[in-house]
Image (cartoon, one colour):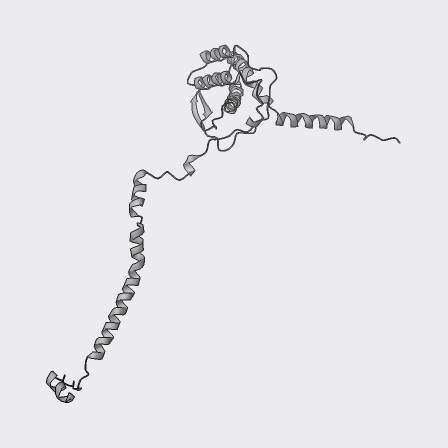
Length: 235
């Protein structure tokens, strides 16, 4: 029996190839050979010496503190600045920027997600950005071929502690402890209504007995017999 293979066109094969390569790029972020050269510090220093030290740029201020992912995330943001500066730089500076950009361009090989909306940026100068870039490359160089950075493809922010309730001060805790009713006092407060009810019942009973003993108006109270009268009655 002859089995016919599906008649796929070359276009279909090409689409499948692109799809599979895109999926592998999304799921994998590793490097078999180190993309960081041995003289990256020299290239960064040459660019730093040529640029105005106070040229304003921005850096992220609330990236999550991850030992390796954090370094990679900062390089992603720095590489975007290199591309932006190349569009406004002169020919000499463009060459220096391109040399530095080549050192960190390897981050574009991984499918990083767009920066999250929770990320906050603060303004700084270009010298600080270049210094941090050099520090991140130093931190990554020993691990760049030994780690898979697939878990780093999404930039993460630090928790926003401003939305959490402020911690209570020791003075507030002491005030709460002082105002909280103690167990004996609470028991006394519970027994007080019962005691009042018993006192009211005793007073009502005493009042009724007193009223029975008191003669009504117009009634004569028989005299109390003396001991001599009692002796005469017995004889």
